[in-house]
Length: 339
Image (cartoon, helix red, strand yellow):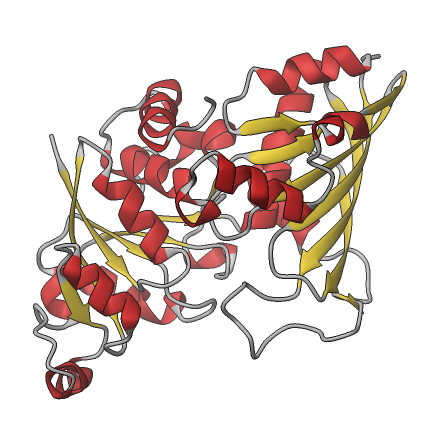
């Protein structure tokens, strides 16, 4: 069985999801949408990806640029079994009635509220809950990172409570008009930030409180975790627990990877396209145990960490496989994760 996948929005997340879909033997990318004929649209077309206008009235923009496209979003939806909505935050919800009208399953991103889908997804945590669903929301980059590490700790040792400080990048690298400049912004000033309640949409039993800061940085987010476990764990115990998850990658400051820019250089040297690191990065030296109280520092590549989750959500919703282990194995192997 091959599932036909449409992607609405070919930007930061959309183009990465498109690349990932093209690597899956059980999926076919039927097309992507763009609002205008920019370089991303032209590159996609040059790679043989069918490009559609997100709005029918925008077809004339592509015609004026001399770019032949396959039609409008509605034309694309007619070709698909499922649509991955990668439009900007809060825009995806406006498309839901259109997806329903076409009787399409749809995946939304973390910029949408939980209520748009009624189910928030992380593959290792709740894959089976997404099986056969019509609508699923893949949680945000920060929530994805927290879900991965907290799930691993909870599975191995049990979690009594987690307290997290998030240091958030102010903008993505290409968003030169966004983000704080020469400023550190409590985001929000109040506690908790939205990240803790969002984690609880996936792991409802976890007692978590989060606070967040936005900083003048574009490469990654950093999280500082203080977790009280249900039982004692040594630093080696914790490293061992994390090491069994291919989507968690442990790095060492002693090896010269001592910053987010160092992590990105590491990704470049690994030969990763766009220096993507869909794995959650945890510094080994940051893992400290005081019996049942532990600390660690982790980094999230916000542009790519959710991509494997989108692929697994497609498999769960369309019942390509009902095994989370099998889906994650296929996704990890195709994207080179865990090597």
